Image (cartoon, rainbow, N blue to C red; front, side, top):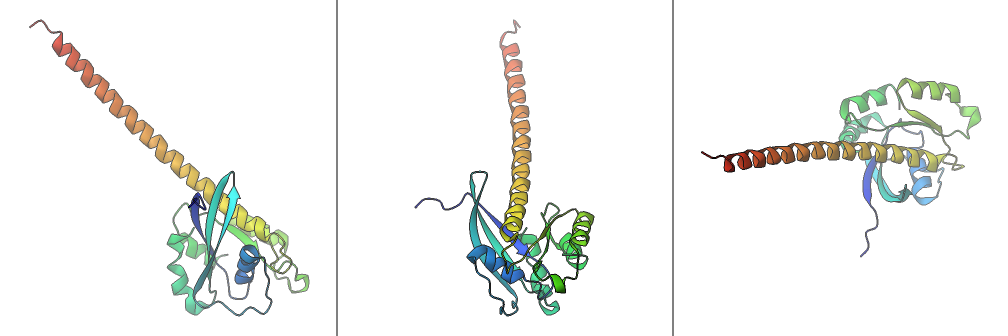
Length: 195
């Protein structure tokens, strides 16, 4: 059976209850939108394979419950995966240092109920060193773009890690080769001795 993907990444959706995490996830993975969706209980996930730079990337997207009573469950997933103020603080505390994040303002189609302007969202994202996307699960606006971008960021970070690892391995092999060469020269010097 042919390999269905080249790499596997886990993404984690964080945010308060009712912001549309599950609707975004379903829109991205299934192309569907259900405005009558009920709140997530605990943690759920869906998978999708996308292609980035010729690589088939399988992403597991974990959908977390935003309610306070489920946050102890949610915190257990930060370390495995790769929002703001409280959520950013939690990510800093529980996620690895090289975690990749983007800030998403969902429900951009609900202009009359808007609580954060686009400029405020951008400034907040800049404060935390994130890229910002305004999305709408209802209209599908920027849903794919936001998921694809965070996946690209994770892939780039992974490639940097592999490059660093290979660079370290190359340095190690060069040192070993130099030691072997020096040892060989020392042995040659001993054999030519006319003692």
